Image (cartoon, rainbow, N blue to C red; front, side, top):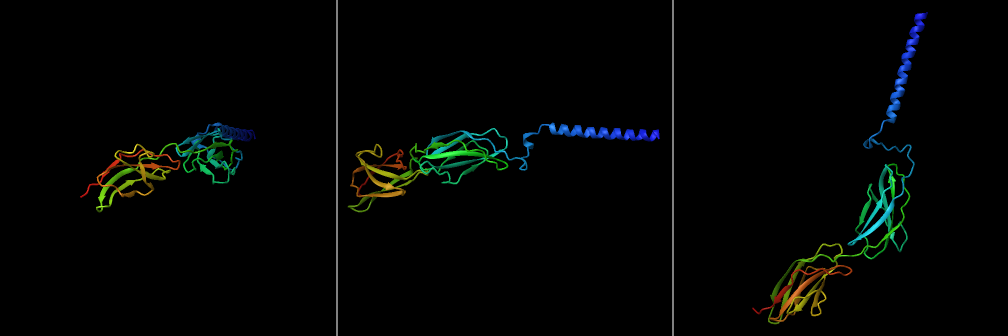
Length: 249
């Protein structure tokens, strides 16, 4: 009888030791720090919205607006939503929101120059919880720089008859987003100083890449310059002016 009770006691002690060891191991694993790369976002128990975006700011570049902000300190932020509208409409549903990843800056490149816009931003987390909207920011894109010069500016003189003389021009328009056209300026005896030279004559305005200037005088020197312009309008400088003198053949 004594031997049987002793064996039972030994078994109980072993079982207790195993139970205590298991409890200790489970506690250690619970307290062990988890690497950030091993974080798993669970949708089962996260219903807490992330914080609010702060320090919303805008800066004006040429034909664009750059919006920047400070993200909240939440570690589970997945992305950002930007809501914007024309200031005159006061309706943030006017345009679809811009949805981005976890960033703190965005450049708008397709806004209307001279039009005032309003913006607000909020973040969302991996469980689609959305933070509060930021304070509003306002900005107006403006055209700062003139478009680029035209390229491949070429001329050929044409003697059509005893009474018809012309100069045929060709060029390549710039690919600037705000390019609206070119002005071809003719001036006798000396090159045009700019597109507003008081002695110059604008012989062509448009978006074509060629033009024939008729009605020139035989043996008279002419100079031509070409200027690209945008919607403001701001005018580019001209490539080297072209000189033309029709000589009877």
